[in-house]
Image 1 (tube, rainbow, N blue to C red):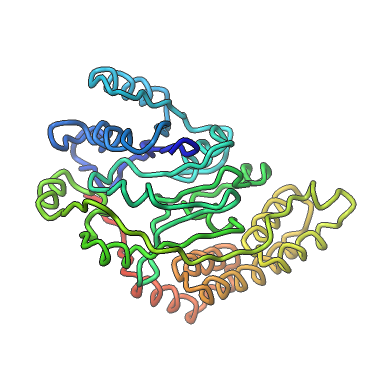
Image 2 (spheres, one colour; image 1 turned 60 degrees about the vertical axis):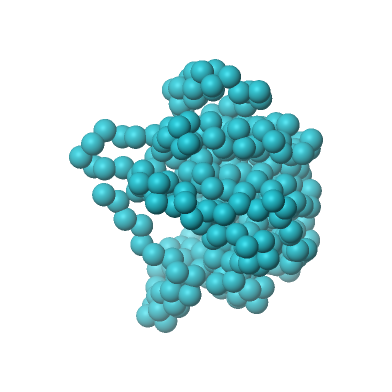
Length: 340
C-alpha cells in the first residue's frame, strides 16, 4: 500500500513476559520459526507495505534492532522512530503519537511486536478516512487499540502533548470519523482462529498456539460500521477572542466530549480555569462520553470514559460506578494483568 506505513510497536517493557528472578528479556527477539519475532513480522509486512517503521523507546534498542535486521538481510529496510521524550505521554500511546507526527502525511497501520500469528490479508483490505481511525471490534465490545489504522490527517492538538496520558485508545476517542470492523465476523466468515490476534505473554505460548492457527488463502472483509462527528476544534481555529467556556461548549455540542475533558485538563494545568471549574466540566463531559460510547455500542471506550471519571472526580467513586466498571469488564472478559 503506497500511502500507508506499517508501524511495528516494539518499545514496551513486556512486564507480563518477565520473570522477576531472571534478567530482562526482549519479547521482540523471541524465536519464531527459527527467526526473531521482529524479523518475522517485518518479513510478513514486506509483502503488503512499501514503507515499514519500527517504534522504539531508546537509541539502544534502535542500535540492537538495526544489527538484527542487517544480519537477516531483509529486502526492505525499516526506518526507526525513537519515542519523543518531550511528550508527556506514556506507553504505547507515546510510540503511536511519535510515529503519527513523524509520518504526518501518510496513513499508518500499527501492529504490536508480540503478535506472530497476525493475518496481514486482513489489514490489507481495511480502509480509513483521512481524518479518522479504523479498528477491529469483537462482538462482546472488546476492541484492539494496538491494531489501529490511522488516517493521514489525524489531528492531535499540540497542547495535549503536555498532558500525562497513557491509554492506547486516546486518539480513537478524539477521532471525528471511526470505521469499526467486526473482528468476530471476519474470523467466522473466513474460518480463522481468534488466536491470530493473540499476543505472546510467555515464551511457551508460541509452541502451544502455532499448531492451532489456520491460514486463509483469501480473506473477505465486510464493510465497516461508521461513526461520524464534526472535526476536532483547536483553540486557535476557534479564534483567540472566543472564551474558554464557549470553546468548551462548542466541543460538547459537536459531541467531542473527550476533547473537552482534555482541554479542561490543559486549561486547569495552566491556571486558565479553576480546579472547581475543571471538576465540574470533567463530571459533565465524561458522563456524556460514557453514554455516547454505550449508545454507539462501544463499551470498551465507555469503560475508559467511566474510569477516567472516577480518577478525575473522586466524588464519583461510588458503589454504583464501581459496579458498572466491574460489569463492563466482565462482559468484555477483561482480566487483571499478572506478572511472574
